[in-house]
Image (cartoon, rainbow, N blue to C red):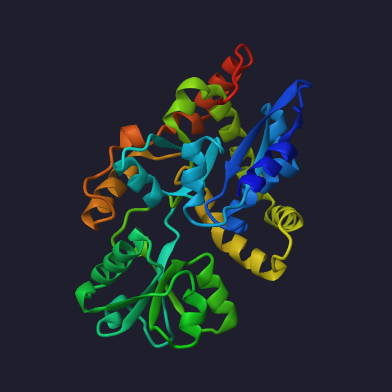
Length: 335
């Protein structure tokens, strides 16, 4: 992972579109590169980062805990985090702040075998979970929201192996992302259902969030605004040009299945934009509802303080433009 971060920093070196040196910035993803990250790769492919005065170096994590570790240690300046991991980090006293929504709705779901048409039918059956803290909450919310009793659902830890576990019949259902494992299952064998958590009682929270430390936002706020501005442009390009964005992702991430990328990206396009049709925004009203849900289903002990956990201002055009202008008059190098 250390070599990966170094490689990303070296790859990011260069000049901005304005002729001044672009500042290298390391961004660590939440998971293996996939279509949910298409806007990030398009931002680099079209030099939107350089136009904003930064040079993004993208790092793919080797484990699900890498993102928060690299962010805390200072080896990455920005990280994509699952919103539940952000809540848990804040509960542990870590000064991490969400500054941009990557998607505007939950990606979490319960994937059910053919023949299971509603969540309550999982009573008396076995469901696979990865073992991350939010899985039990997602399963409980979906089963109870569908009129069932979560206590009557048996669970077994299967790691990130939902697809083989379901195809083999090892489990009747499993937690997973509807845009990833859900699409893969539907292509492998028709009849599987994806019960999305926001269809069964959860608010429409942003599953993935761009994050920085509080120290970065205090000391290098204009840099953070530049990164947000570049990524918003990247995701706007993806929404407007999904096929081109998919090809840019495939060129930079060898080994992806083009047909699967197209199918997954097509499913994601509606959730890249919020209710007002904008990319990247953090809706405070939605986040307050998420905060209550997060504690109600036991992911954290108390509802997260939305004002402290998120800084929505950088994802607004006014906030980003102001901070970028300020950056032109100050020297801003992250530690």
